[in-house]
Length: 128
Image (cartoon, rainbow, N blue to C red; front, side, top):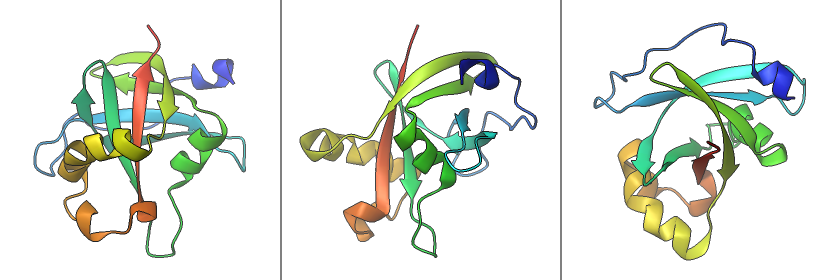
């Protein structure tokens, strides 16, 4: 998997978002169904040395493919401000999740109106 993730992203996304000027990062995962490498651009918030992102259930009731993939293989590649590095993804629960809700609310403003299973908070822990 590491060799596949080391390939450059095919479609670079801008670092800044047009949505409320939130920062963006590129997340590269290996699709858990097809095995192909996928890169998506996501909004994030910083929490200490880690990066917080949110996975929201779509209208069909499913999570994004990148989220399903990192649940199977939590080692991911991130690109932030032109720097690529590996990170370990984790999905906090309980008190840790509650403590991160304010950060997640900046990413998904209506998060408090959603039932908890519809929005997962994901913490990316860099592996420097």
